[in-house]
Amino acid sequence: MISRRSLMGGAFTAIALAGTSRLARAATDQQELVDRARITIDSMGKDPSYGDMRAYLARSVGCLIVPQLLKAGFIIGGSGGDGVLLGRNTANGSWSAPAFYSLAAGSIGLQIGAQASEVVLVINKERGLEAIMKNEMKLGADASVAVGPVGSGVQAATTTNFEADIYSYARSKGLFAGASLEGAGILSSTSWNTAYYGRALNPRDIVLNRLVDNAGANALKATLATVAR
Image (tube, rainbow, N blue to C red):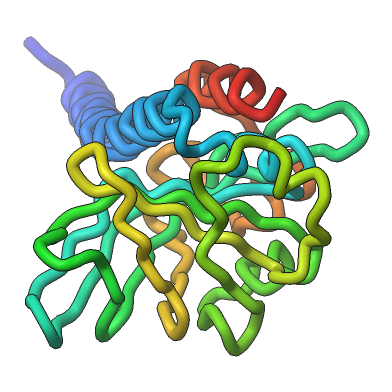
């Protein structure tokens, strides 16, 4: 006969396994985003048009990668997408684990016909990174943002001061999309951070204090290190 203790033990085990299963399924969504971010930065990093982006990344304090920014309307419409933020150690060039964010705006000036774009925000200054550390921030208000130069290789990046806190780069269907992100909001996602790391963490703990890591992000960090050389 199965004892009451055995039944209770089995029930608690089942509950624990169910919780672990839900966490694993949730983490799959985050890992997929991390993997797509790696593909985006690798592809744009190999594109000769983005030589300046590579040079700016090599001197940056961090970057936010949004693999897919969707534009809902043609002339007026909402836009948004999920992304990952990584901090860069300027002393040794290493990259932090990713924190999860969403980019949202009422209207983003994408090139005509571009309904979806890949976006990379290169964070030039500590002020820009600190602004993104907030739970909510608005580009252009909490930190200055400008469309990053494209197509001239490393010359502009090595001869021009970092006037803007953040440079934005966007590409749609393999073409430069010229997205203006002035006024866009950047929101942190506590639930996604919790799902990926197994405990509640704020972006500062992940990106600046580097309290956690996830082996699933190693390929993304390695790709960023290569692109930012």
